[in-house]
Structure formats: C-alpha cells, structure tokens
Length: 204
Image (cartoon, rainbow, N blue to C red; front, top):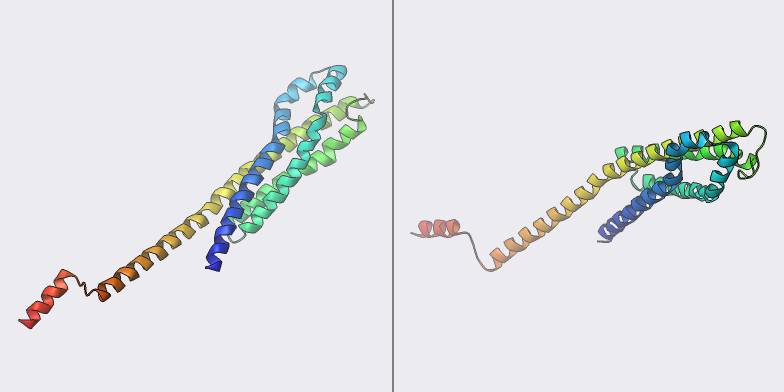
C-alpha cells in the first residue's frame, strides 16, 4: 500500500515538473523567438535608432534566468524518468540544447551588451557588436525552440508508464472482484446451473 501511494505521488510530482519545465522553457523562448523575426529590421536601423530600440529591451536579460530554472526543471524531469530510456534520452537532448542556448547568450551575446553599457554608448566597433548580439540572440532562440520540442518528445515518451500503471490497477481490481464472487458462490452454495444439473443426473 505504501509503495502504491509513493508511486502515485511520484506521478503527481512528474506532472508538476513537466508543466513547470514547459512553462519556463516557453517563457525563456519569448524574447529569443521575437529576436529571430526582428533581426533583419533591426540590422537595417541606424546606430542611433538601434540604441533607442534596444533601450526597451533591458529587462530581457531576466528571461535568461527563466532558462536557467528551465534547465533545472528539465534535469529533474530526466531524473524522474531515468528508467524510461526514450524519455530520458530526449530529456538529455532537451537539456543539452537549452544549455547550448544559455552558453551562446552568456558567452557571445551578453559581452556585447556589457561592452556597450547596455546599449547606451556607441563604441568604435559598434557594428560588429550589434551583429554579434543579434545573431547570438537569434541562435539562442533556435536552440531553445529545439530544446522545447525535445522536451515535448520526452514528455510524450514518459506517458506509457502512466498507462501501464493504470492497467495494472485495473487488473488488480478485477482480480479482487473475481475472488470476492468466488467466495460468495462458495458461502451461499450458488453453483452454476449446469453443475446442479450434473449432480441431479448422477443422483438419478
């Protein structure tokens, strides 16, 4: 009984972790995904206009921390499904892709942001820094999106285990009901009609 209760709580935990991982990954994907579609237009802006546009994006760095939390949630999901080879494998793929997205952002994009003091100054190598920021942020978005797809595959692969658990529960309930019916038949001497007829024929 204790084991069944633990298994039930484990599935509740798994559902919660899966929803959290999806939500955080999708949340972190919002600015990076927008960056992919904005890239051509932003590269065509003059330096002064570009700085004005970038000034409204200062809070976007907070989304990077959402991806850090998403990585933790995906890692926990991988631990919970480690007995399912397919689900665990896709979890590791998702974790790797989200990790690469983070690496691209912090190693390539963020230093460009720091070099321009949050895009408040125009250094001599402004054009190079702008392209580095734009393409790195867009690449991070592509990797994050791929990670979200891999996470979806991992979650899908984890579901058959829940189905098997339900089937086992149904089988146990059916076995209990069958045993109860047999016990009632013996106690009340309620045998099938063909057995009673057989006894009558033998007595005759």
